[in-house]
Length: 257
Image (cartoon, rainbow, N blue to C red):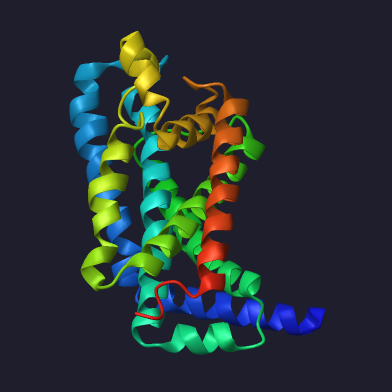
C-alpha cells in the first residue's frame, strides 16, 4: 500500500471508532461528567472543607487533576476494550487483519479512537471542574503530553485485555480488580508525600502515581514525584505495551478459539 492508501485506511478506522462512541454519547460521554461532578461536590466541597489545604492548594484544586486523569484512564481503556472485543466477537476483526492494511495501521486505528474518547472526556471533566474551582495550567507541554501518552497507554491496555477476553464479562475484570484500586491508590485524593516512607516507596510501584503527579505538575506546578522520571516511566510503559499489542495481533491471538 502506498502512503495515500495508508492514510485513507487509518482515517477510515479512526473515523469508525470516533463515530462509534459519539453515536451513543449519552452512554460514553455523559456518565463521566456526572460521576466526576459528584466527586467534586462530595470530596471537593463537603470533605475538602474539613481537610483544608493539601500541597499548598485547596483540597478541591488538589484533587481536580487526579479526577481528570482518572476519567481519561477509564474511558480510554473502556473504548478500545469494548470495541475490539465486539469486532472479535462478530468475527469482523479477522477480515480486517487479513486485508492489505498493515497491522500497525490497524493497531493505531483502534488506539487513536481510544485516545480521542479519553481526551474528549478529559476536556468535558475539566470544563465541569471550572464550576467548582479555578485552574491555571502552568506547563502546557507536560499537561498535553501526559494526557496523550496516558490515554495511549490505556488504549493499548484495553486492546490487550480484549485480545485475551473470551466473554463480555472478562472485559470488566481488569477495570474492576486492577484499574480501580490502582487509581484510588495513585494519589488522586491525597499527597504521596503525606504517607510514611514505607508507603511512599510502595506507592512508586503503582504506574498511575506517575501519571497523576505529572498531570498535577502540568496544571498546578506541584508534584510528589520528579516530573522527568514520571514522563519517562509513562513513555516506557507505553512502548512496552505497544510491542505486546503488536505481537499479539501478529500472532492472531484470541481469534482462533
